[in-house]
Every structure is written in C-alpha cells, then in structure tokens.
Image (cartoon, rainbow over all chains, first blue to last red; front, top):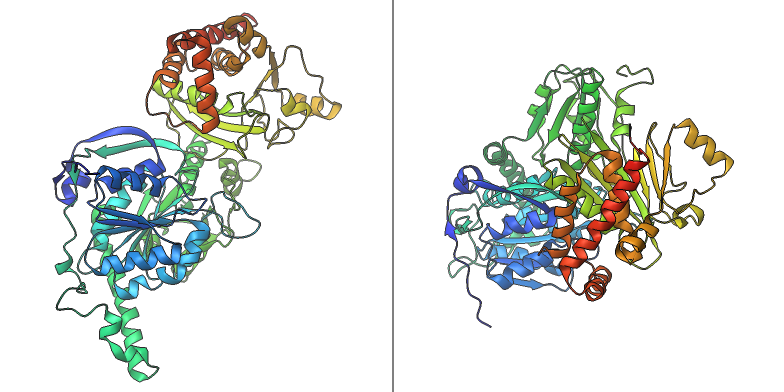
Length: 389
Length: 223
C-alpha cells in the first residue's frame, strides 16, 4: 500500500524548541514521546516491545504507518534491537529505540558498547522494576546501571519534559563534538500511562535530517570501512596497543560528555533547576520524585518553611559544579528516590565530598512500584513538632 | 487551595475507572487541575479495582497512587465486607477529618476496631443507595458509577454539574477514547439498550442529578 507522506516543513532545532508557537494538550507520557518522534525526522526505529513497556513503540509503529518515520521493525529481542539500531546509526541515519526495566537489562550488553562506537541514537527508557519479587510497576533502579555505560542520560520529570528532552536528545546526540547516544528516561506508568499538560509546536514542523558528514566518527560508505573496530584491527588483540586504544576510546567518551554540557544548557536550560535558592534545607531529586517534592515544598510553605529543591535533569554528564554551587548554603539535604540503591544519593555524596558541610540524609526511598507520598518527604524534612529536622 | 486526594475502590464491571476519568475530566473542563491513576490486576468482573484521582483549584504536581486520601469512594459493599480491595482496611491511610462515600442501601455495621479508628480520625461516613438511584433514574445498575459522581459533586463542591455533563458527553460521544476490550463491549451493550447515544448521556445525567440532590438534601459536606 502506498503511504501518502505527510507534508512537514524542516525548521531549525532552535525554532522547533523555542520559537514556534505551542498548543497545550492533555496527553499521556507515551503520547508525548510519540509526538516528539513525529517532529524528529526519524529515519528508523527498531524495538522489541517487552511487557511491561508502554504504548510508546506501538505508537511509533503507527507513525511509521502514517509516514512520519521512514522505517520501522520489531526485532527478535532487545539484544537484536539494540545491535540493529547501532548498525543503523553507523550508516548515518537518525535512529531511535525504547525499552524498560527487564528489557533494558537484557540489552545492556549492547547499550554499553554504543558510546565507544560513537553512535548517535535516542534511547527512550520507561523505568520499571527489575529485581525480585516480580513487579510490573515503576522503579528506576535500572538507571544505576545506565550511569556507567557512557551514554548521556537525561531524567524527565513529567510528560512535558519527556517531549522536550526527546527532541533535544536528537540534536545533542548528533552534535559533532558529542556524537554519543542519548538516553531519555522517565518513570514508567506514573508518567507514561498518566495524562498531563504538554505544550507542543505544530506537527507540521520537523527537525532537519541528521547531518552525518559533520560528526566525530564517519559513517559507513564507499570510502569508510565498516565500523571502527574493523578498521582499528589491533584492538582485537591483548597487547599494549589495544590497552592504549581502549583507554583513548573511553577518554573520548568522557571528553564528549563534557563537551555536551554547553548544548544541555542551550537545549534543556541547564543541567539542574533550582527552586528557592539559598535555602538551608534542600531536596535533591530527579524524575517524578521532583513532582512529589514540588508538592512537599508547597505544603512546607503553607507551614511557614522555605525548603529548597534542586531538580537534576542530566544524570550523565552529572551537574558537579552546579550542585556544589546550589548546595552552598545547605545545612541538611534529603534525596527522595524511586529505587532501593540510592544512586542519586551516592552521586551527590561523591560530588559534595570536601565541598559542603551539609548533612546528607540517606533517603527517603521507595521501590518495588509504590509512589513516593508527599507525606513521606515531609516526615524526612520535619520532626513531629513541625520543626525542620 | 481546595485540594482533594480521592481513592475510589470497587469491583470490575462497575465503571470505577470510567467514573474516575469522567470526574477528572470534569474538573479539567471546569478549568481546574486533576490527575488520575487507575489500578487493576487482570481485567474481569467482580475483581478488585482502584482508581486514584487528585483534584485541585490550584497547581497539582504529585503523581502516582494515593496512599493518604482525604476522600474515599467505595462503589461496592464487598470491597469492605469481602475485602475485595488492594487496600485493607478500606480506610487505611485516611487523613483526619475526611469523607467516606459508600454505595449501600443501608448502613454497613463496622467492627468495634473499625468504628473506633474511624471515630478517632473524625471521618464522615455517608451511605448512598447509588445502585437504587441508578435503577430508578436510568433503569440500569450500570449507571451506579454516575450516582457516585453526582453525590461526590455535591459533597466536594467540584466539579459542578455543568462540567460533569460536558465530561459525560465527551466520554460517550467524543472521539479518541481508547477503552479496554471489556469497557468497549459494555459501551456497545449500553448503546444498544438506549438506542441512541444522546439518550445514554441523558440517562446518565438524570442519575447524576438525582444523586446530587440526594446528597444535597441530606446536607452532606466535606467541611
């Protein structure tokens, strides 16, 4: 069947993200993600829609049917999907995939290899429980594993973030001095299955296509041998040269992540957002824990207390300098998280070590799928008499 | 700021999730804010269903299920008497000075502990003969959920009946609704029963208004 291609106008990322007039819609997180993909000029999407994921890839498949995405298929599993998308990216086209929880863990082997090969990809993550007992509810422990892979990792708070970060993700991922995969994570179910207000530019507009000749690593074509690992043969052997090469590839990732910071400032408005700057009691959070914390801050205000809130938007690169600056006046910091490991708490402690005298409380944490009640955050902030702990 | 965290519990087939969508959308259409999280296991008749709705006349940030509600709506007595619920006892997490609305023709007699705990929390417990109201006003008990919404509108003062009517119209006449298989087939059966969709809306509104008046006459109130 012939697909009638939708007529979309290519505009600059700046126009699409900042200038084009936006309209408000009340949609789910999965819908927000697919609305972003619709405007992202995506060449190929490949996924294995594990249960539980979300409607996201189903909707992207629908976009393929409507002609918004040029190619789409369901892979045999996550190892297959993530290997294939990395191959697709090496040919210079714009790529996206998505997964969640157990599926992400299954494909982690491949995900960890993306950054070294410098493949621009946008990888959407709808966080779900990965550990026993079985649960299909949200919990973001899987991001702990993502932090060490070399991927750029953004953590969206709500449906609006999921839309904006996804579009920005493509732009940042394909910048010459970045050339890295960008993972955009969101807490599953609470955001993917629930509706929220999202402001979006017209779907008649789309990003410019990927410009693969302006990236750090050349794509496969008639002049470039397929993939770096074949071209750089010594790396196959265990010898001094291979260790040297491994070190340089990993240093490249680190340096590329550092260089992505200025683009995160440009397209995400910074690596953090600060509410009530200079407060003595501060909440540091990412993802939907930020939403819960905003309500706690509001209720604390009603009680006559000014509580600071720092939203961490980018987990990789981590906002080291920004957090040191924003926590300067802090005497006590709490870190609400939706996982049992407390990875954000650990990152924050490493960041503030020798830079702050603030007490960093080891929580609060919820996991296994439960939400973070505002009441729990308030309990960690205030004692029974209503004074700050 | 007017702010209600509503936990709705019932059994499969009663339209708990539908009711929560209509309530939430009614609040949105009236210009206020609302979020909703439905929660059910396998979708089947008489299996436990919960749905969480936050409504406020100011900005809402929170998401996820409601663990500490200040309004509880029980659509079926078996939620309490048979423990058909994800939350036990049915009032667990209830905040002080809250409201519980229960669909029952006559008051359910609670155990001594339950009575004491509800008293300690200063909870107002209202029994609404919602199924009877639905049968009388629409000729079907499927509209029980609408009766619960009507009473809730009177008790909380939001959303207004006009906004609820818009939400009911959007639910049954609107496009773009993605209903589950079970819900879609129930929709079809109701359309067949009433012949025309507009009649379906009219009957639902009749139930909502009857329950609204019932609650208003008895001066049920959150305050």
